Image (cartoon, rainbow, N blue to C red):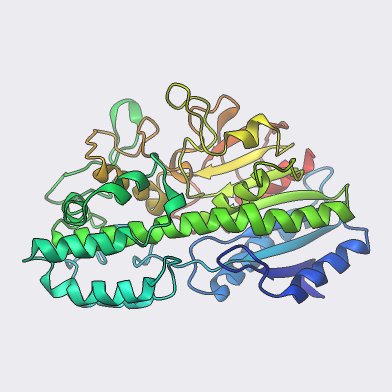
Length: 437
């Protein structure tokens, strides 16, 4: 049995469809659970990663801090438990940008070129589930030199990308519906508009992303132009595919495994932890299929999660709830739900504003808490009556977490970017939530 910083550690790999990839991995975990003696199981999922090494590195660094917090014995009711880790590994794919920005420029000083787009298309082979996906990527690559001069080439390129997006991925809150409906040439045209990645202060202190700012918008500006539009479209197609896959793996594969464990250990406490699209995965795992009773989750911690800030909402518009609203209403998570959020997260903070280009939305605070298009890892849970806004505190700080509540932990002073989550402050908040269950 593997150990990670003193915790029994079990990896389970899942396929694109949510099936367990190696039955021996599941059996090892099940056999361990049958032995009894474990009180709490951490279930953690990575997000956008090219390979398992990235995920394992994330798990190692985070649980090093979890071990440190537990060994410090500063949290009553936490150190006298027996913990184990279920590490979820699923086939995800990084976006082209090194900071995982799902649209925009490749670098700070140079516009996007054909060679870069060719490399991106090559790297995405095997990433999409659509029929003949790799052949479509090959054809898209052949069209690249023609995009700037030929409307027909732009239409074919855009239509090829639209055909890669899973039919079930439709969502008005991230632009998927518009992406699938807009003609290919119009898709490229709309996504060719510049969007500033700087976040100036808006009215009332709100942080804003300004579309069409032009000029010196900062080193994280999106370059305008046809090739930029092609890059944005390709990144959004990747975003929608990974979003759909994370949901499927969570709702079917991980939920099913948790049910097996629950049948063997009715009193075992599940603590779900998800980073990036892993946040969507573990939330889908808590929700499970519509026709199944709750699996019974004690806490959930979403670290810079990549889904809409209206995901848990009640009536974000008249008579429309967020996709994961039933997780709250049906009390699928008994204890606290923690949500780290920061405007420093350019990956989540720009995914939704980019989608707004598809709807041709222009606003002074694009992507902020008041926008239709906003990410939970940037703004926290919005229009969610059970949610409270707090600050992510230093280790030793005072929290009063309560069962059935959500806590938007503003992390502007602690988390510098999308993947900067392996912190003592994060581990401390996580264990404080665990301690109240």
